[in-house]
Length: 553
Image (tube, rainbow, N blue to C red; front, side):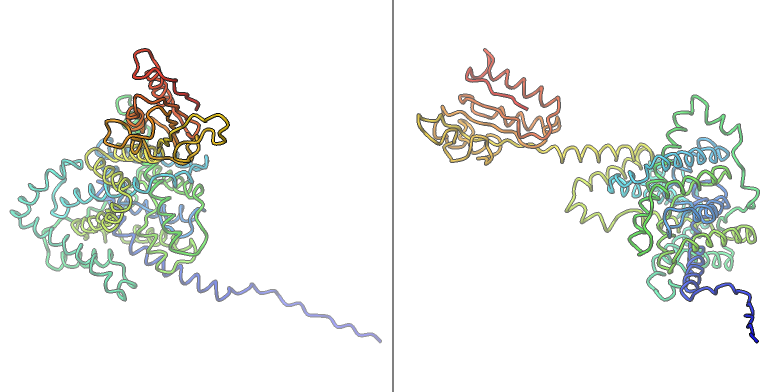
């Protein structure tokens, strides 16, 4: 008799997470707390410096974590309100009002989405690094000049030049006022702690310097009851005001349209450039997946679109928070998403905590952040090794301080293009003497110095070393031998004056043959000028009536 064994089915249990997964989750959780502690004072400080309610900075940080943090692009960089756009946002709020800020940010976000869809993200890597560093340096200078007033609880006059011009008066007013001196002491103490705290490495790994500096300044102000200004709190739901039809109508006014378009373009381009350059810097800090620039640009555009709909500040990827995220051991994008969760919990549950924070302490944080935007350490080697790049950097920074962000960056880009055009338009003349071949001579076309007639080896550049009479050099072997002048390189209008000087310095009693076959590029201005020179050389009133030079581009 056969017996059958019936197997008893056991319910399948879900697979337990691996040890590696648990390690990653713990690392992301810890990193998210560190980034949250760094982000809170920066979000609030940027909002206050931009002339908007402090809660709007937290809203932008929340969107940067919960939305942009989830989207593909860069895995570890963190987005939120940035000091780099503070000056531009402040000017926009003063010009168009707080209600119109959301409409401007919304339009900038849509523009970023379009640029990402057109796969323009990778082209931002073609922007000169000197222009970006000059832009950040200019932002840092303007930011510092404005926040020096906030350090003394004073109101800044306005734009960059006005703020700089008013600093002597600010110093006099501060020294004559006890409350201003108290605020200055709080701000200066905050800056000192921001500089000194990272030197205590063990403590800095646990608590970030901005949080410690602001918390300690707040405790001192509260304990001593100092007469300094504090952050005004309105509540998270009260400050979120989506832009309405009236705001868009105000921006569409013909008189303001040009300025509006410039502001939107500046928002989009500067936020995109800063984000993508930050992504490149973050990629060098870790060994994880590299950034997809087009996807990252679309992620930033989606975040700014939502920030615009909420009436919040524009966002960028911020290198301070991103580097803190990497150094804290983040493994995946979960850390930046969690940091947005903590910001949301803080803004919803503890909004009153912002009301005890002194404005001078936040100003100290931004002065310190503005100082870090100025490439002080990079300047000396850049000046020694790449002087042209250093000039572009300094010119961009000065232009931003003297005018505004958009015009300064535009000037920097034009200077970078002009510099590159100047460096690539190198052209020189190769000059050899030709001898008329004798009958039966196998050395036809050879010069007296043994170089071939096509000038593959030059005896000199221009007229130097040719024995040109009246030029202080010894005479050549025979004044009747023709000269073969071969132009080599890229002949553009930028090098035309030097090229014509060399041609006009050639001997007047020699036959000249000009060969342009060695030019890789010959623009219309150079072609016309060389043709005019040839006509003058051969004309009835020209310096010589000998054989006309041949122009064969």
